Image (cartoon, rainbow, N blue to C red):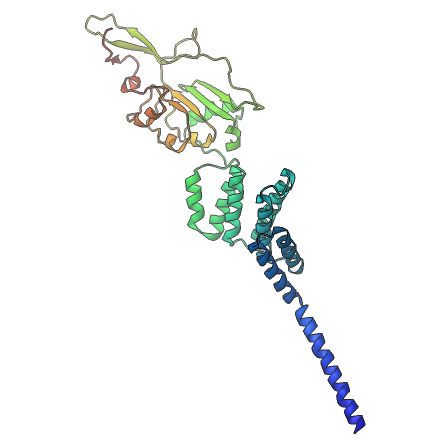
Length: 337
C-alpha cells in the first residue's frame, strides 16, 4: 500500500513538473513573448510613452525580425519622440526622423503593398521638403498598390523628379538650352536645370540664363543688355502708323535680327522646376498653356503666334497685346502722336 502511494505521489509530481514546464514554455515561447511586446508597444503609443514604446517594439523585432507591424509601431514611436516639444536636441530629433524613415523603408522591404508605410514616408518627405524623395515614394506607392490616392497626390504636386530625363518638345529650344548648361550630348536631367531662375531666349540664336545665388555654375552671360522692339515711323503719306523694322538684338550695338526663330513648342519648360522668369521672343510659339502648371513671377512671349494672351496678363510685368504678334514689316495700328 505504501509503495502504491509513493508511486502515485511520484507520478503526480512528474505530471505536475511536466505541466509546469509546459506552462513555462507556453508563456515564454517566442510567439507569446512577441504578442506581449506588441501589446505593450501599442499600449505605450496610446499613452504617448514613446521611449517605452521603442523598447517594446525593438524587443518584438528581436524576436521576429521580419514583422512589418513591429517596424510600423517603432517608426511611429520615433516620430512621436521627434515631435515632442522641448524633449530633444536638434541632433536627436534628426536622428529620430532618420530612424523612423529607415523603419518605414524596412516595412516596404518586407511587404511592398503596405500603403501606410508609403503614406508615412510621403508625409515625412513633405515636411522635410525632399521633393525628389516624395515624388519617388508616391510613384512607388502607386505602382505597388494601385491606390489612386498616390496618383492624386502626384497630380496635385505636378513636378518631375530630379533624376527624370528632360523630354525635349522642341529641337531648336533643346539646342540652345544644351549650350547654356554645357551638355552637348546625352541625357539632360531635371536636376541639371534646377539652379536656373531666369531663362531668356531671343529667336533661336541667343539664350541668357541667371542661376540661383550660390550656384557653382556661372550664368551664360551676366552683363547682357538686349532689346526686342524696334519701330520706325512711316514716311509714306498713305500710312500714319508704325512699321516693325526688327525683332531683337542681343545688345545695343549688335546687328538687328530680322527673322523669327524656329521654336514652336515650349512644353519642356515644365522641367525647369525653379524657374521664376521666362522670356522667349520672336519665334513661332502658339501655345503657352504649360505656364499654368508653373509658379512663375513673370513671362514674356512677344512676337510669337499666340492668339489668346489672356493667361499672360496675370503677370503684369509685360503687357501683352495683339500688336506684338505681327509679322516683320506689318503696319501697326498705332496712330500718329
